[in-house]
Image: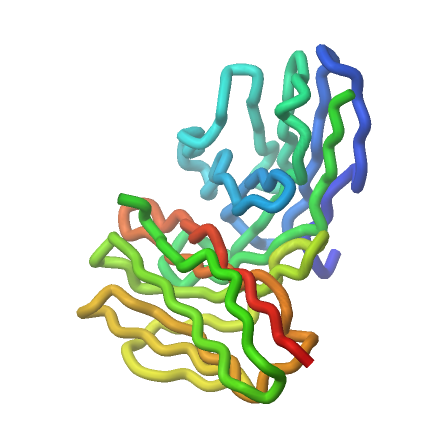
Length: 115
Length: 111
């Protein structure tokens, strides 16, 4: 596709359920980021993948959060045993490489609501 | 110290005026700097990038970079109500090239 694609656009889940959020980056982009944005707040970094390097997981808020990237392309962010404070917009971005000159482009986001 | 800092605003300017947004960063070796615009309820959109000291102009937008002072700014000339948004400054860190964002400055252009 032409841009970063995220699915679903909206997700409502019950507290305690697990959810999976998907990100399909721009073709050929080796770097992929996940961010979280709560209402009226800034971007909170979650995790960063660059090529075959070990991901930077330093932003994951708890061990209920995990992410993987298969074949260097599609990424899935999984939240286990969701809590109400997990409600936010989850944004994915990709960039062509992990070099310094790396313009990142965002998907439209997944709005997660935990009820 | 945060890696990227911005004044949160809100910054209110009259239509037709210049809006000036500032950003400082802590990683002295950073080489790449980006400005994103985010409308309410939308995802961030890249509007400018700058890699060299000095000014870079694109339409009504000018990015200014001063690496010695670790400072990058964005000027919006002839501000329009459609420029009302949150502007995010982002910097690529030197250790792993991860993109680090500031908290954003909210701009309101008064008609």
